[in-house]
Length: 163
Image 1 (cartoon, rainbow, N blue to C red):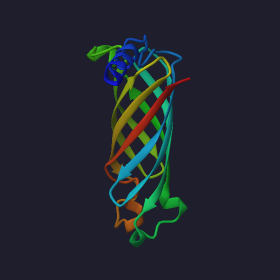
Image 2 (image 1 turned 30 degrees about the vertical axis):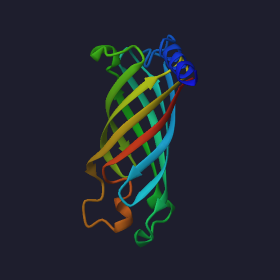
Image 3 (image 1 turned 180 degrees about the horizontal axis):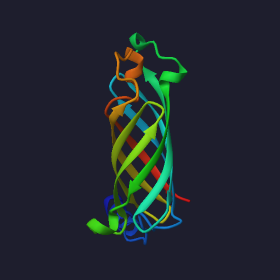
Image 4 (image 1 turned 180 degrees about the vertical axis):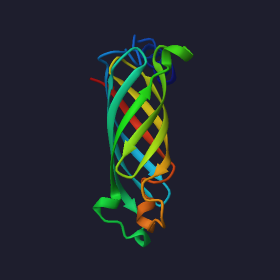
């Protein structure tokens, strides 16, 4: 009986009319974990839709779990980014609740790129994941070990909300 209720719940949640990206005026808030080599932390981001497939936003990350040998201070642990996304959910047309978005970002640490995906279970709640990678580091000379935080490949995963 519990299995039947679980299946009915999953099906009813998946049939709720949600849309991953609505275009101009769309507001998304995301909160989740940031995972990278030698550090893990918290990530929050906000995206605002400018057009049918374009959004801009801001993302901030703070590394909480940093290996001791990195000797990282607040400036090494914190990063903030201005970001641009190309929301392609309606182009790939997998599901109305699914959005995939490649993008670019300018941060305190580097100029980078990201590829993300969102899936909404209801009109207001979903999950997301992003892969982030630096394209050009601002400090190209020998980076101190703590300067590798936010200056390497990382992954964000968490919850996303329609505002």
